[in-house]
Image (cartoon, rainbow, N blue to C red):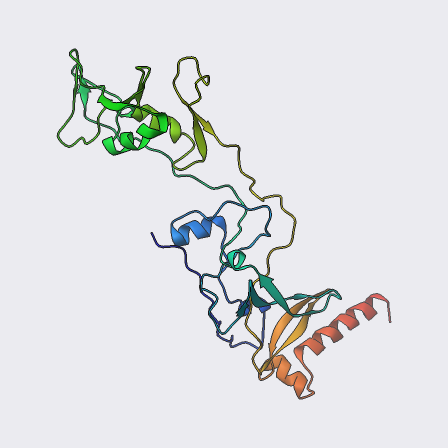
Length: 294
């Protein structure tokens, strides 16, 4: 499977007189769920040493929309400065940080499902949990220091009868002390938390009196769900000649917007004409004066 790819794309100019600065974004934002849907793999685990980062740049830092110099990758973002004024600012990231998301949430590991079998033992059906592929058994052999493999289904009494289309067997790892570790059961234990869930085998001599290994799942990794730090800002394109930053007021709230100077309200302002925003402000003043009885 190829690595996830995210390239900077300069968005087209909206055919609107006023629009959100969000429309200037150069990259797509992801959640842990949308990342998995888009790329078929989980995003890297949450890294508490980094800020929440919903975008990533895999372009190799060779693009006209930003400059890569030395150890840092430089972007332009839109936000507030120390005085609270809205505008464009510089953002510098380490290359590895620029190339990776940092998304909150726990990694979801695929459920381990054992396919059923038509194998029989003593003319009765048997559990497929005891079956495994020889390749899986060989992969585990050095993990436990086993000496060889044995098919536990080959017995003088009630041997396992495998159908022709069943590639699995009752493989077991023969340990130096004579114990036999059924590989199917080892895989079942290893994947109890999902395929690929982190952990390790405890194979120490005094781990269990019986001498059988046990799978120890790693402690739960941090999820970042309670992280209150600001997000890593999204890189944006530069303003076009017919765009400027403005403020839009709705009631008592004001928000930054991008205004087309060749369309609608911004064009009217440039021409000194009465605009819908002017009408809104006058209506607000009228309501205040009416409440005061003036």
